[in-house]
Image (cartoon, rainbow, N blue to C red; front, side, top):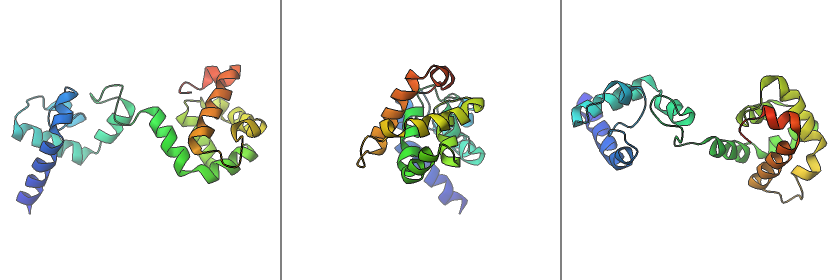
Length: 164
């Protein structure tokens, strides 16, 4: 069983190795394992990949730009925002209309808004709902663009929300 796991890890690490090498990483990619084990030999990189898998920190490193993953990680803040809005669009339309809700608070966080402006963010979405959702056919991407455009024009939120 251990041999099967090792072969699987080796196969996967070699499958993704060209992308890792292009980014300046070893076959294991970024993450704590890649930071700890710099040697770019197959067995070393298998160890680094296993360490990343056990610790589960590689995904966090890619999204946050930490653990040697660089600021342009695989999931940029903008992509994370688009994914969240797409997955929670119907709920967000209701919460933005009422100016409050869990998903709306999460969206404020994804847009980099400070915690003390979340209530103001909710009030903003409620007050500007018609300009954020221009038609019934507004797509999640269009909504996000309209929201960011509106936020950038509101002085308090423009300075508070760092990822608009």
